Length: 272
Ligand code: MG
Image (cartoon, rainbow, N blue to C red; front, top):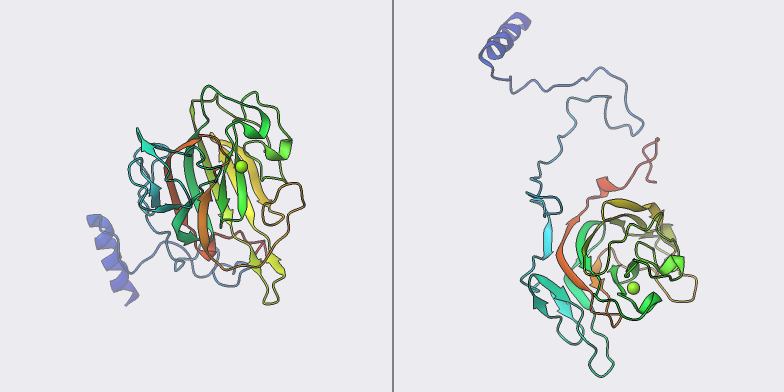
């Protein structure tokens, strides 16, 4: 039998056809610490194939496109509609002093997000009043958007900051009027049944391709002039773009909801 199988495999190899039943890898190697797979396990599932975007920053095949430069169908404005023009959407002027947040209709938990923004040019005002907006994951956890180009402000409030907690590692801001990119991995917090924090939220962020937050734990719900703390909530909630009374523009917004397997594991197989 072994001879016949070997002969068949040899014939298949000779014709360039891979034997379907023979997966590359091993079944006699030691078990990994998670207790599920051997080292180089032949039976470990292959990663799903995803077609990347045709150009850097373009949405891959498995992304949920939230804004493609034309339609705002994926969003609801809480007040004045956000105008779309020339492939970009912009925070509208305040009407009667009221803010208008842009809230995604779909809810998300763990996500990879890509977004491009442009600070108003010429800049007006200074510090927190210059080009302020923000990406609010789960409508609670803000990664700051600000005109960070030659605009002194408190470090934990500049662009790339986890607002009120962690300044960005560096400031790779482009000039106002230029498009800038954010690529962010957000891991939602996990709560125990009694509402206590089992695992905090984590953020990894690249601003213009430069690392500004590296798997940074968040303190809790974003808040001004106070220490953030968590309040238990569900597993999914909308993504929200902030209206801070500054005409910041956005384009090319997409997310990839992430599976549990995306959470980092420690070397024993436990969740980090
Ligand atoms: Mg903000």
